Length: 279
Image (cartoon, rainbow, N blue to C red; front, side):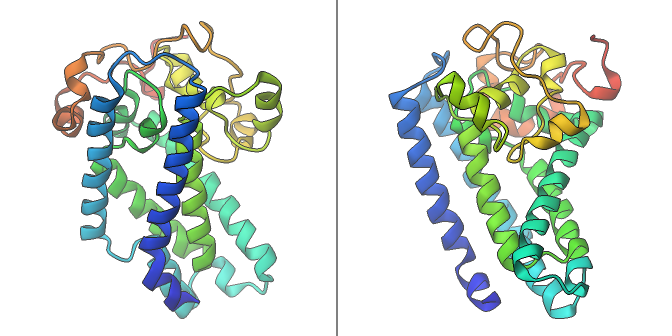
């Protein structure tokens, strides 16, 4: 099984990504939640161009990725779950749960440390909110995140199949909850107890700093409620709320080149949690 995963992991991930992307894109076309302020084709060209660039950099620097680390840890007996005697039906969901908690805490950290916030601000400077926003991250943030993930996979001793499932679920959830899609409000109220919904995560992309620093979850919605970072709705409502961060709202910075240089030249504002001057 491990050998099969190592051989087919890129194809499995790509196939599922394309399938989920197409589904959410069609949903956005059929039932959009908000009117976009910039041309979709231009935004997609730049946001997806960043995805292609990040994939190239990541495969160049970390060719085996997280699944490869899980295979190595299983072969060497590294990590808590590799030394425990838990059945797969317990060990796999537990590993996914722990990895998701780690992603939540990492997300908070990227908002709390000013230097990391500079990198993460690339994700928040999108002036619109649709499924491509969910894949818009600076390559240095992507590499740092992979380093953290590799360490956690080895420490936890997550099985290769658990890591693959987690990464596929997380990527799919990020596309879904960044989707510019309309859900009936009663459905959203129920669904956000099970998974982060677009209306729940959209609050996190508000231009208001207090809302930017809420709803950090990407997949499992419970962490925000447990740790007190949950906010139900944006103060201005979903149609009227502004997306982005206040000092960086120029159209020119939506280009691929500007996204790459933004952390080094842009003003990320007072959004970092430990430097906040907001209430």
